[in-house]
Structures are given as C-alpha cells and as structure tokens.
Amino acid sequence: MKLTTVVGLHSAQSALLYSPQKIARAWVDGERHDKRLETLLETLVTLAIPIEKVERKKLDKLAENMNHQGVVLEVALPQTLSENDLKTAVEALEHTALFLVLDNVQDPHNLGACLRSADATGVDGIIITKDNAVGITPTVCKVASGAAETVPVYMVTNLARTLRWLKTEGIWVIGAAGEAAHTLYDSDFTVPMALVIGAEEKGMRRLTREQCDVLVKLPMRGTVESLNLSVATGVLLYEARRQRHVKAR
Image 1: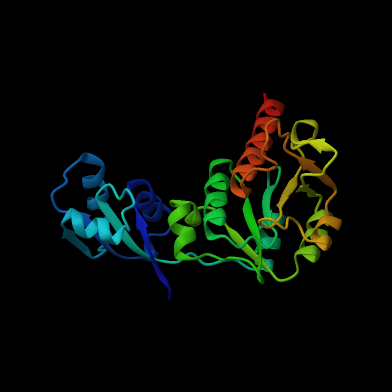
Image 2: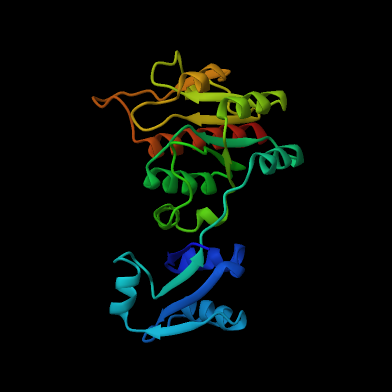
C-alpha cells in the first residue's frame, strides 16, 4: 500500500468524509486551538486514528512548506478504477453524463489541477490512459487538494475503443483542438458528453481525434497561442456547467 500526505483542513476534512479508512495517522499543531481544527481532532479521536501533536516546524517539513493550517494526514493513495467500473458507472447514471478524458497527460500537476476542476464542476469521472500517462501519485494528490478522493479516475488500456463504446451509450465525444472550426461558445455542451483533452504540447493522438464527434477551441484574443492544459480544461468544464444551468432554469 502506497502512502502519501494530505495537507490542510479542507483536504483533511475531505479525507475524513470520503475515505476515513485510508487514513493511517495524523500530525496536528499542538499549540493551535481554533474551532475547525479542534472539531477535526475530535473526529480523528472518534475514529481511533493515531494522532501526534507536534511543533509547527515539523508540520512545515511534513507539508513541504504548503499551507497546512495545523494538520497533516498520512493516507493511502486513492485507487484508480477499471474499464469495467467505468461501464458500470455509465450504465447507472440517472443524469446527463459529463466525463473528462485525458489523452496521455503526463504532468502530475496538470492531472491534480484537472481533478480539482472536475470536482468543482461535478464531473462524473476522469478517464486516463494506462500507458504514457501519469496516474494517481503523491504529487497528484497534493495538487488535487482532496479531489483525488471525490472524483473517480478510470484507467483504460485502449482509449479509442473506450470512446467508441461511450458513443454507443449515447455520449458525445467532444475534443479540444486549437485548429477547430467552432469555439466552445458555439457548441452544445448540454448533451451527454465526454470532453477530451490532449497531452501537453502534442495534443490528441490521431486515433483519439478520429473518435471525436465534434472539435472545439478556446477563442484566443491576445498574443499567446494557447493556455495551460489544466486552465483550458477548467474553462471548458465551466462552460459545460454554465450551459446546463441555463438549460435547467
């Protein structure tokens, strides 16, 4: 079992809410006594999770100088789910699907940031590739700030095959590409959809692109050619959420 650290009150609360069984132990600031930390400490005691009260300097070191707010947890890394798990999840959906697909994304900071955006926008799950891509790592979990515990991550061996199957389930495959003819504002994101984001610098692979029903782009009005992968993902996901909110009114 691989372990990682969870830093800060929000991330610790998420771990306690969604996967308390994965928490191995906790370090807390012995000199801090604010209400949120004390409430969290009471929960840790109730769950019989080993607690060590330490000085702030040790927490700073454990947290690698991230803002720990007086608490660091040691937890088991979240598990990625399988293709069969994905099929079960899709077939059980009772609302309009919204999946995020990352095609060979390799930067753990990008995956972590995408997890945060996916959590914030209510994505049903992230689909990643088994080969030539980052999985759930300690760095991913730190950047995700708790979202690695709340957003299902499905690892597939053949992405093109998975996308074909999603389409048989009535899910539109919408790819992000700078050369697309239409912008995200011209496109319908209220349909059941899987948003596909290509790898850093290289973009989507050819076989992945061929499975896309629609290609969309972000309008770029300045001098830069593109946005960071995770930033672009956040913009696209929030546009999907905006359109769905407007339609539901």
